[in-house]
View (cartoon, rainbow, N blue to C red):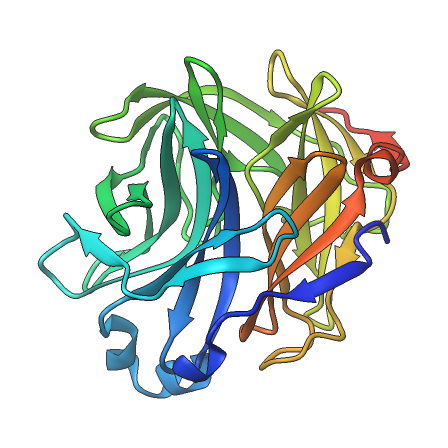
Length: 306
C-alpha cells in the first residue's frame, strides 16, 4: 500500500471520551487547516439513547505546521445559522473556493431525514456558518449515499453525489442557497480490481496533480474493513478515467472502537508529499504520507461506462 507512514494527530482525546475523529484538511490562507468531529459519547451510547444524538454538536478546528504536527487547536468552534430544532452535524469535508474556506457535512435535524449541509468556515473567528442544506436538482437522493464531495474550480463548483455504480455530477447554480444542477450521469462498468460489484463511496475532495484530478473512494468488505482506492478524473470534463489496482490504505488494525474503520476524509499535495487524513476506529484522528513520486506511480486500470 502506498500510504504506510501513519501518524496520529496530537489532539486532546481525553476531553471527548467518544473520540476525536474523521479529520478533514484544506490549504487556506497560507496554512493547512483541519476540522474534526468531537464526540462526548461513543456510537454504542448514542444508539442506546437516541437523545444523545442531538446534544450540542462539537468540533475542533486545528492548524498544522510544516512538519504536519498540530500547531494550534481550538475546541470551542461556534456553529451559526443552524436550525432552531435539535440538530446534528458530523463528518466534515473542507475545501477552499474563491479564497474562502467551506465544508460539507451531514445535517440531521430531529424529525427530518438526513441531509448534507454546506457551511463556511472562518478560521479567525472559529465559526462554522450554515449556508443552506445542499439541493441537487434532477438527482433522486437516497439516504444511503451521504458521502458527497465538492470539486472547486477557479470559477465553478461541482458536487459529485455518487461514484459507483452510478457516477453522478452536478454544478453549482446558486451559492447563497446551495443549489446544484445535474450535469452528468453514467453507469460505470463493474470493477476488476478486487472490489465487490456494489456501492463504492466517495472519500475526499479531488486534488490536482499532473494535469489530472485525484481522489480516493472506499468500500467496506464483508468483515467491515474499509479499503480506499485511488481514482483519476479527467481535469477537463471531471469524468473518472482510471482506478488503482490495489488499495492505497486499508483498515483492519485500527485502534479505537472499530478495528476495520479507517475512514479517509481528505487528500492534499504539499510539496513533494501526498497527505491523507483519516479517522481511526471511530476514536482517533490521523494522517498518512507518501512521496508524490510513489503516489503518481500507482498502478491503475481503466474505468469505462456501460
